[in-house]
Length: 275
Image (tube, rainbow, N blue to C red; front, side):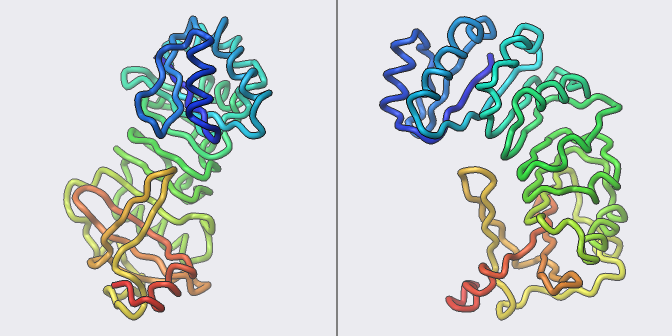
């Protein structure tokens, strides 16, 4: 089953309109306006309700989740311009494989502005360059992403799992950042390190220091979409790029986080002694 999440307008109005038009499967979470629908409902109902809501409200952002096995039935419907108001795109189907053709088609028709999540598998020849520009990226099954593509990452926050990067690869990426690249990046989360990384390899030829409360706070705040996550950086390794921007790399139970501190956050930590 696919779903549409509508953002930025009153829940009560949303609920009454949707119910009046025959969509009874609405999220029970009062904070989220979500329509759950089968692919055959896209044709006669969903486009109608979205265009209707678009006429009523000044701004409407859509978070669209699509099961890949329904794509064939939805291709014509997705050509409707209402789906270009897509804010966030989610590819679903843990037993499905996302091809370059399907990925390109969905991104072209929906044109998500903020980010994407890919829960399904990726084809062996998947072109990662198609997704590197989104502000938010989450890919739990990254596969064999080339290191050069990781170095070309233009996201603010990227959550990548089941990758094949080694400590040597990460070291090369960190040197790439130190040289002044990946300027938008605020957080890179890599899931898949079963053991504590070999810091001698990962930080080779990088001048770093242990945590100093006078330099930065202990905790890093990260907001992917609506939920804020707090990362404990007490055991992190700190270093700066050529422009003096501070970053921390820290390991927590299979997760390696590369975190870039914003100047505003550093000033607040100094002002209020947030350690």
